[in-house]
Image (cartoon, rainbow, N blue to C red; front, side, top):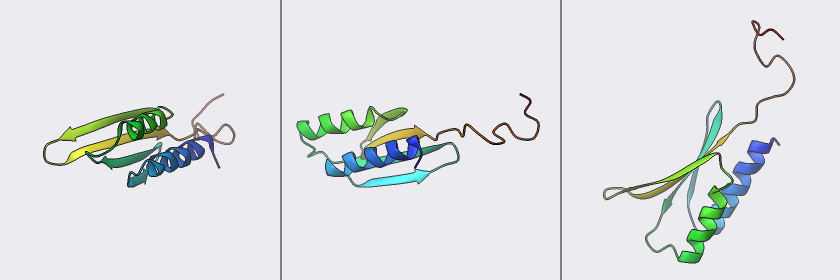
Length: 92
């Protein structure tokens, strides 16, 4: 398991433990984790949530009157350190 996969798994576990329902999406260069944040989330749970997303490369909160609050976090995927990383035209 790569370092980024470990980070995503830990992040997802901590957010789930705080009572949030998650959506995890894999992309080519990063993984996103999103969760709807209920209005009833306690202050202690908020602290845990903020501590968890601090391990992500980027995170934020989108709040709208129509869709409530959505917490998001992005974890960049680990770049391979061996093999043909740069492609056929890459020169060392």
